[in-house]
Length: 243
Image (cartoon, rainbow, N blue to C red; front, side):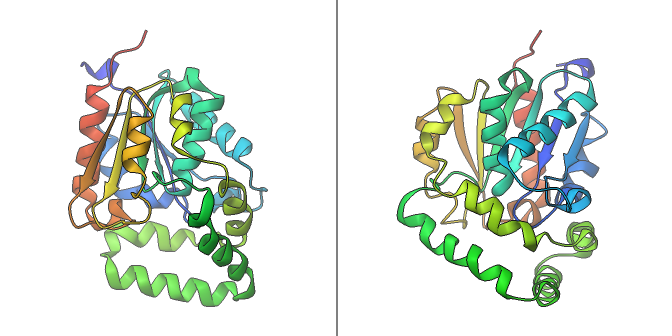
């Protein structure tokens, strides 16, 4: 694959975060790939915009168009993974490959009950307190060069109820049938909840495979940035060239 064939890459962040989540990956990949990270509606620079999966799909599409290199590899984490699945269904012509990170569990059935409870609880806790808790947690677990951009960008707690309220009850492994591109299901080895459906998701797509980041948890791109980036790079270079 030549530099001209290298696929553009669009990164889509997870719950409450923003484009800053992907600063380690962008720093490592932008020399070799056209790459960008988005702020989903209700997050980061778009914090005042109302959330919807439709609007999220259009944000991803705009990022693909802005790179001006044709269909893109879309990398989505958690909430961003489900938004990427919706984008794949709505805008298949813009998708060259898909990486689902921490987003291979059905959001239907009993699994969704505790997450509905959390989504309902979040608005009852002051945002300043949630911010302090998140800042302390990230600083305790990760070095500043990994999470500094995420902390500086702040958190979208106000969007969490609407975002997960729409995602919960909507996605099952059957959603993979709408993805007209190769898929890498990339999970942290210890992310037991969000990787619990990875086999079903992989079986539902003819060109999907599972890869695990050893010892990593739900935030695998923070737990082992180099391994996560390497997996994305290898998958990108294996994608077929599209005319």
